[in-house]
Every structure is written in structure tokens, then in C-alpha cells.
Image (cartoon, rainbow, N blue to C red; front, side, top):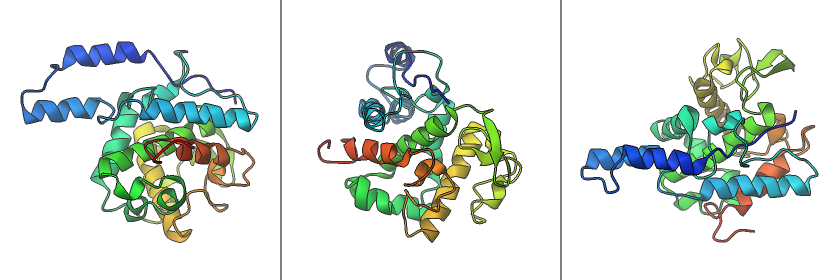
Length: 247
């Protein structure tokens, strides 16, 4: 499936934010609100990650650009070039932060920390949430072009939405952790929460490995048909948020 772009008029978005908030917050609540709608005080990391995905895709002879200037990419609901964008990206970050104690394996990092993101162990929970915005955006980008209605036949029925979850059976895949409910597949925020729960279960049973040959998602299987695991892995390793210097 050909994907469109991820980067959408960042300057316009930033100008809207600037007009909505004072240049210097005068109260703690204003500062918190401003931080909530920016890229968590880390401008540039998301753009850098998207560019790393593009570079790695060229190496793997694929042509699905992430973070260009076209305006019809649904992935902007997760992130655009310079900030977490739209309801899904902000909600995903907040879900991770609010549930970090229930996402012990993801918070510890497993192979993400040990192999692909050496700075992870020193990050704040907020910074770690950005890493998971990276990962889930890349997954949705390759699984469905971030289409909430994308669907195809799966091994146990129809797979649907951003992360191609089994529609009507979503709650069977997070190991009873309570992150998934039936009907979540077509709801981007709920599907993102469910995916975090499923990844938590994967880390629990696969020794903390993100890129597991037994992953639910083909895009996270090193030998998967989609051949996208290597692209996501390279992009993480090239992120200066994750590494002292880009590789």
C-alpha cells in the first residue's frame, strides 16, 4: 500500500499554538498546558526520527515517505515533523505516562534500552513516551497508512484500523492486562492503548524483545513478509533522543 506524507504545515500549527498561549507562562497551570500541546519541550526529535525512517527505507528499496510536505497523510494525528500532533499522538503520550506503573516492561525498555536506544534508561517517563510515539507511529505507518478503516483478512478474522487488530477480538490479545476492549480496532486512541498493552505482553513473554519473530505484528518481525522491522530499528538507532550521537 502506498503511503502519503506525515509532515503537515508545522509552521502553521506552531503559529496557532503561539497565538493560543503566552510567550512566557505566568502560572504553573499555564506552563503545564503549554507543555502538553508542544512536543514536550523536545523540538526536532520527531522530525529527525521521520527523516531516519525515510533514509532507512531508501536502503531497503522501499518508497513510503514519512514527514514530507504533502497534506493528506492521516498519520499527522500521531505526529508531524516538529511536534506530537492531533488527538492520537497526545493521547498516546499521556496514556503511557499515566499507565507507566502498569507497563513495567515497556518502561524498563527491554531490547529498546539495551540495543536500540541506549539513553532510554536515563530518560524521564515523559521522554520515554516520545520513544513509544516513534515506534507506534512507524508501526501504524507501515501497517495501515494510519487509516482507521484499513482492513484485510487475518489469521483469526478481519484485522482492522491503525495497527491491524483483530476486530471484535481485541481483548484476547493483551494477556488480560485490561488495555484492550472489543471494538478498539477502529478507534485510533483506544487502539493505541491496546497496542501498548499487547507490546507489554510481548515484552513479558519474549524476554523484552521489540523485534521478535513471534510478534503479533509482521512489521516487528525481523524476517517478516513486510520487511519493515529493520527500517524501524535503524530509525531508532539514528535518533539523537535515543543515542549520544546519530549513527
